[in-house]
Length: 254
Length: 175
Image (cartoon, rainbow over all chains, first blue to last red; front, side, top):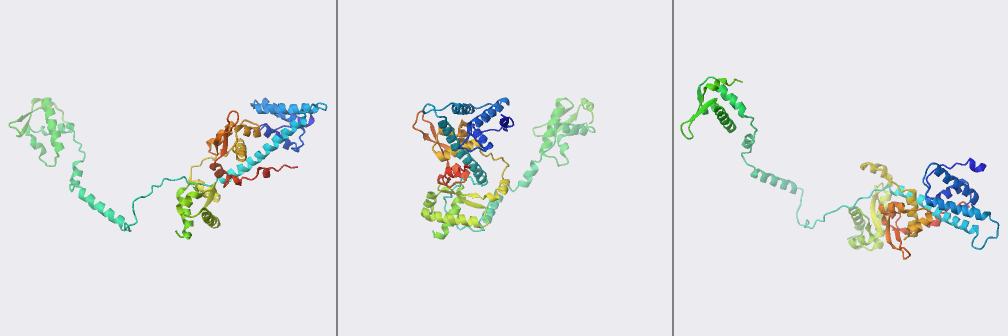
């Protein structure tokens, strides 16, 4: 008891009962062919006890092994001769064979672990999808001038396609910030000194755009609608005359 | 094609493929017999090995593939996003060892040797394409048989299963 009392197994994850038994055999420096079943069984059970104490779930395989060990141990305690086929030596040999078999693969596993680490340090290319060119490139006389030549052709074609009035069009699409509100103010200011004016007088400076004309016209209509001024046109497409009304004065000069 | 050029051609083919190219495929394309091709591949391989070259030729089950040398691993990996390469667990390694030496093998055979349930290990190995199903055993319950894949050879650096050392050699028990 003294021996096992001071004996603590560091709780570690064993791969199974054989792995645990193996650990115990090595720890006790026992010969695998000459296992002291009694001692190993005690330590095995001690380990299971520790697992239980720290609430580790014990896989059923561990319990099966525990019962096998106990069976061998108890049979060995029985006085001989035993009935044929019931020799504890047989059971013990079976266990030893299992252990030896397991040890082979356990060592093989550690060899594979090394190889896995080493061969994992190589990089492979993933297969790419290459489109196989089926057209005949052999007879075409490709030279270094081909690409500049093609580029020049493209440029010429592009120039031909381009509208020569491109520059003017750029001006046309300038966004004009003219609002009816601003035109109303302008007209009111215009009427400040006059009682009437011709619509065309608004655009005397000559730098007005279509947008100016349209917006001014809408401003005039708007002012007419709220009766701030009246408009007259003698004939179709004739000059529009804008006149002040009495209301006009009420419009606050901005 | 002149025989001198075949070595370069093999190199071109292996480069373009990326994946392992079987010796028969190489033979079909080059019109050179397998034995000569293997000599050429060995010469190519030697050239890669002797010069300070970054790539090497690997043989996997009769197929050949270019890959980077392990010497440069620390540098080449910087090309890629850092990712922890998860090695196989002890349980999975034990399981694949048993399959490698006893293939095709059933789960029961694996569990008999390991003394513990091995379902999760087998599933993991299937997932990693290291083993594959190889039909069913003609026994009660028709259990599934498993065998290793070419990916196993590649991952563990074997040219073929014949290269696996005899398992008894690994057994060194202190008598």
